[in-house]
Length: 222
Image (cartoon, rainbow, N blue to C red):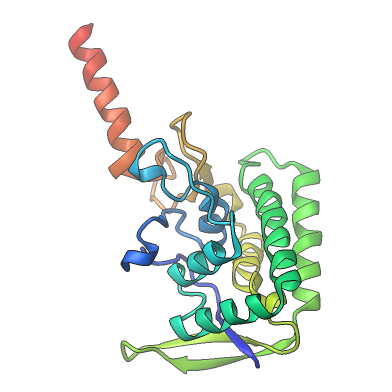
């Protein structure tokens, strides 16, 4: 049974359902949100929850990012029960690809040839083995979405939207605007779309407010 996955947009939407409430999307680009998926509950405190600690949680993240809708997520979990080896391999590959994409995101303004070339090789490998078609489908809210419909190995297509998002970042030259949060306790990365290109925090509600509070305490004590 073919499985459709949403094509990448500039940014994954914030999750609103109770099942996906622990996931945060502040990267402004899908591939950067995927890189940040190893710290999905950072905004709630110092606890860290990896979105790839199980295949079920991985599917939950894909749903929160609107890569899979509810029906397709259910079908994917059913397939995982039928093919545990395939789902385990897909999870392992997702973890490895996330490490590759993090190295690419953290290279900053100083290009690191090895990180870039490794990322390009992995992106091309995933895109080269993907089998399927792209089509436009209606959304429940009346809008439309472009989906990638896999054929053959349904697990092989799970990373396509995030990989295509990373490819778009390379082609468009956006890497110069990818930042790492200025909070040393935070490992999140994000696309800086500000006019002056001087955004420092992944999220003003969390890291930005902590920095503001720290400056205020220092001013009072000093």
